[in-house]
Length: 586
Image (cartoon, rainbow, N blue to C red; front, side):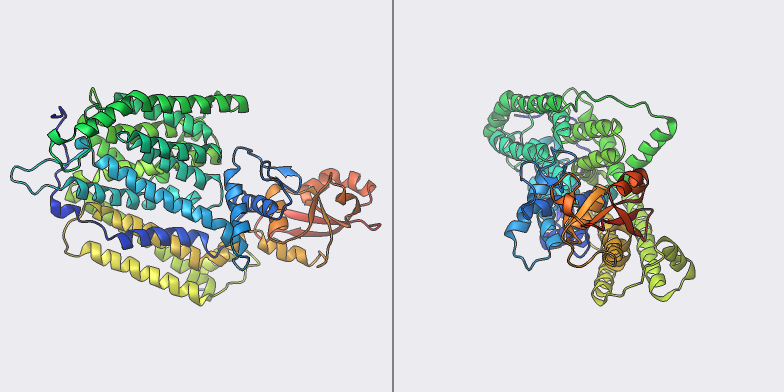
């Protein structure tokens, strides 16, 4: 059986597909994940809110099925799985482990699972016959398995290099669970020739996405994947390095998949649509944006997927005859379809929901970028290297300079800027953080020396500096800048100031109007016995807390109820102010 397909634009020798050493690749992934999770405090908004709900369930103050935090329900009831994972980790992990770190361990594993799923998805797509490089007349072309492994390595490096991955991949929120679900679904869709395995992985992925609030994305992704599966080339067996005449079993399995796998995907999409309809989240209308808003969307698209999207565009250009064909190649049609519907959905959303939706397209964008690697010329590869080298070196040097300024006062201007942003911040020096930052810098310099040295070509070489530079900057920020970030983005400085006005053995504090992140921080990080205003305990509480804005709105009412202002505390790095009230008769 011969395939009627356009000639491949990839010309790859066996020498160019040498594998990236597995220990180095997975060590890079582990460093990237650990740098953002270990050592820091829970930061404001979604991160600290999630931690508060996890603590409430683990302490027995909230039911599992309907998570509550001091009487307040979870804002998005469909995002329960992240809360369950953190609460379960608190329950089963040993008590000597830091509770904040314990809640992050499941999410660290989920990010690593996303890397693994992306690797295998790129691997299986690259083993398809239409994705193979040009065969040479006298042999010497890359073997299919080695070629697929090299592209899979490149896909993981491209994913690590994406700037958008840094934004949400180190949170204990639903976004991380959705990313792992999207990656596993991408993996399931990349093996249509193995329908049972595809169904198994798709079931896991749909469960992860549904229980983390990703039902809408799952619906459109399943529809897009079904269309890509039905429209792609029907006679494209995987490249196992075997002659075409020896693959009838693959063709038979794929034929069965084309018969019922799309029906299963459409059935799951119908289930998602029904759920969204009952929840009132459907239909979705495209907002009418002004010109400035469209410019903001374009800027977001440019930096969020960098450097995967330029490489992806290059891949589409070089593989255009395979994509824009009567039967498009599946290894291109699948990631393009998923990226297209994700971007379209993101445009229909606003605020952080747009960023978090784009976040789900990064595994597909990284895989598409990997297919550009066999088609890059030396000049384009050199341009990528020099731009990456310049960009990340400037970022890393800036991080070092600002840290030095906070420690020594020189240069004076960066030190003054930090003092202006955090007037009460006292610089801290950590020998461990300093040593880790130096080690990361040394590794970055070694990566530069390796890339600029004379060595055999490898397909993934152009993504070593982007991935290494992104990891280097993450390590620098989360070591040298960690005290500053904790001071500016956590509630611990505010809690320390509030402790001066809260007795150590306080039995009860009423929430009369706190923001949910503040309530979560006071409950989980300060350990104060917070109670809702409507609870029975609130009638005997001697202290109460609320925001200064809420105090202005309710001052007359609360004075009439016997409350008086005890203290007013301003958050060191923000406009938030907390008012502490006391009741003299309690």
